[in-house]
Length: 192
Image (tube, rainbow, N blue to C red):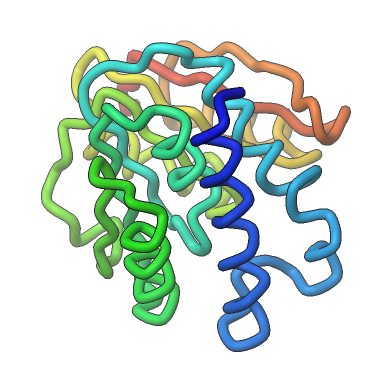
C-alpha cells in the first residue's frame, strides 16, 4: 500500500472516530475494530476490482463504507456516494474535503429518487436484502455494469429470494473479514 493511501485511510479512521458519537457511522461496539473490520472489509473491493473504469456509485453510503475507501484506493475513478441521511452526507462531504478526494462526491438523496446513474460499478454494504436492492441495480447500473454487494451471513438465502423475481449472473467472493459473509459480484440483471 502506498504511503498516501495509508495516510488517507488513517485520517479517515480518525474522522469516523471523531464523528461517530454524534452520528453513529458504525456500531459503537465495533468502533475498536474499525480498521480490521470495517475498512479492511471495504478494501476487499479494491482487490476484487483492481482497475475499475467508468463511474462508481455507492448507495446507502452511511459513513463511507465501502465507497469512500474505494475512492481512496482509486484516486482517478469518479466515485459518487449517496445516502438519504443528511447528517451522514455532511460527514462524507467533510471527509472528502479533508482527505483531498477530488474524485469523490456525496449527495443526500433516496436512491429510488436519484436519476439513473449509468454506473459501471455499484456498491452497497449492509443496506437492504438482495431482492429489495435489485430494482436499484437495474435502474442505476450501465448495461454492462457490475454490482459489488457486501452481504452478511444470510447471503445465500437472500440470493435464493432474489432469484424468484430476477435473472442475473452472480459470482460470490468469500469475505476476508468474516468467513460466513460474501461479496456478490452481480451483472446482466433482468427482471422477471
